[in-house]
Image (cartoon, rainbow, N blue to C red; front, side, top):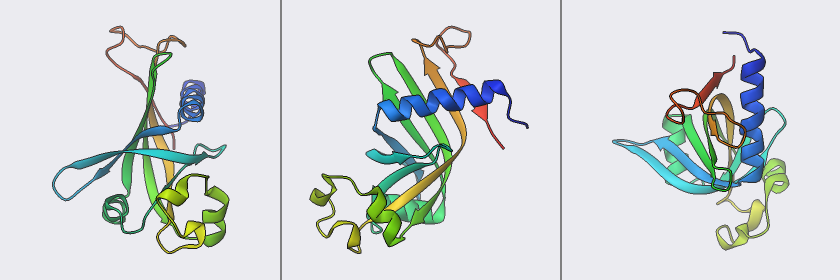
Length: 153
């Protein structure tokens, strides 16, 4: 499948929603059921890569070590809109990257800071997005029942 203008446009809308809303639900595949938890992403690269901080001892990290495919869903209540990002995830433990992505306030969760051994990053590399955005009139027929979906190579 090649990436066309529709695909690029939906990925751009997804990025705009992610930049405007830094909290979302990360869904991983657990042993018996999917696991969802509210997280704050700490960065969004120009190529759409999403960064999330976590503990290497967390359930998120354990799930991802076994099943690296995740969904990250963010809602914009004001517009209303949402994006679901389907991504392949890897755990990044590189000290320079941890320092670069560290945000103020994380010391409550990770007292040793980015240098400590209890802080790693999740790098989510999106391969598909689903978007519903009423302000941008992205709501395929039947009206509001299905999201627009784009997949890239």
